[in-house]
Length: 216
Image (cartoon, rainbow, N blue to C red):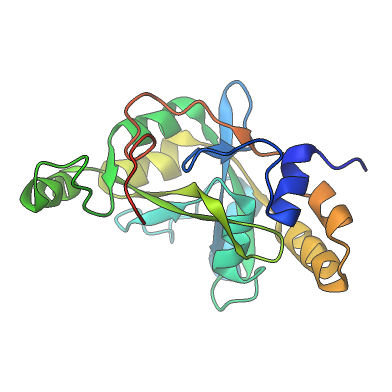
């Protein structure tokens, strides 16, 4: 399988084309975007089987979604951490995802964005979504210079994510294990060829932090 330039970049950590500090990169179509989460088998298996989150999925709690497959692998340890043994690819309606971005606030205080800390705290209380920009990862899960999106959903956003925006749910744990095995053997080129094709996503204007020079 040929390795796409953007995938090879994530293998080596060196971009063929300069990457902006922050960019939403994701597997997406004209109508959907794919994000990742990891759960225990008790939640992950029925969600993948039925294509929707089961009643046991707590809709009142904040949930974090990640468009970056490799950031998800970093977070769940290639699906080995307790209660993160099943990795799900959740295909979302783009209109819902964009709604969450437009109604989000930064999870941290940024003086370039917020009037003061009290204004930020108020926005944090009022917003149904939060955004973090974390270092993207390469195949060895080492940090890269540019950052990827984590989107936290709570309240209305969490409920709509589970019950309105989700189009399909797939269990991609076998893919995670296959890529991890290749990385362990040192076959990074083959591993990179199996990665989801994550391309720049046209996030809506005003997405918090997207054009902010804020430090980590």
